Amino acid sequence: MSRMHNPAHPGEVLKEWLPEQMTVTQAAKELQISRVTLSKLLNGKAGLTAAMALRLSAWLGTTPDVWLGMQTQWDLWQAKKLPKPDIKPLERLQA
Amino acid sequence: MSRMHNPAHPGEVLKEWLPEQMTVTQAAKELQISRVTLSKLLNGKAGLTAAMALRLSAWLGTTPDVWLGMQTQWDLWQAKKLPKPDIKPLERLQA
DNA sequence: ATATGCGTTAATTAACTGTTTACAATATTA
DNA sequence: TAATATTGTAAACAGTTAATTAACGCATAT
Image (cartoon, rainbow over all chains, first blue to last red; front, side, top):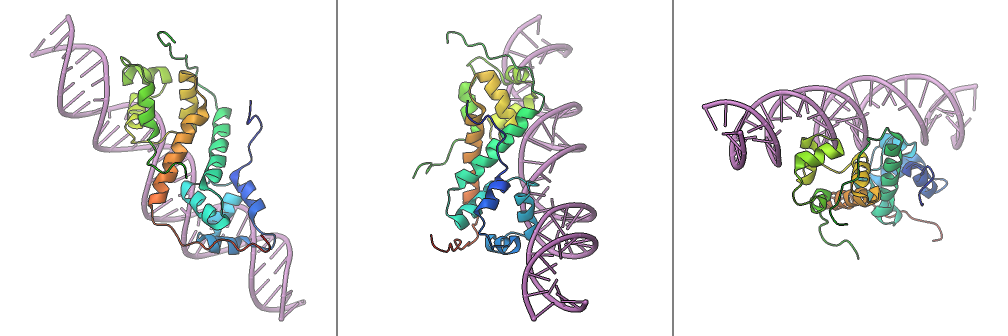
């Protein structure tokens, strides 16, 4: 019953972690990635990879799992929107 | 302190869910994917996608999160093996 | 021998991340 | 006002990956 609502894109959440006066350019520099890559992530134009999760955790002092987990939930939500194949549950002999 | 050891590839775990006499060909048919796709997954030659997690959950009666979570842990483990950039923790004013 | 079924590999396609470069629009500052 | 900085976006490129179909080697059965 949990996770019923459209999960936020990890980039949206990341925005809230950036200090008020920190520019995207500066943040990208500290994360040692290109400004374009960070911009796309922040604006939901790219996914959050495992490598990026490690960078964020090192920078922000979180666990990488948090970030990657957000991406996972996002991916699942997107996948659920697609037409689903009609898969018959596996018949187990003697449940 | 958890997840210290090399996590199993989701395909390895999936193997244990297949009934003894079930062939890869038959399982692929029920999952409505090609036999090649399933074979590669089972042998760790491909990752477990969100769409696949939904198929598996429909077929095996689990949550999709379980499968996708395994892939997440696997991805993280692999990413940790790569050379990591030296990222300085973000200086927060007044922690 | 012939055919059928099985699992894996090969080749191809499509999609995606990340980079650099470039450009337009908007802010900031001198 | 004029110069500078920032941002979002796009194009082009390289590298990776999932998925498909075709093809291969191997086994088993007819």
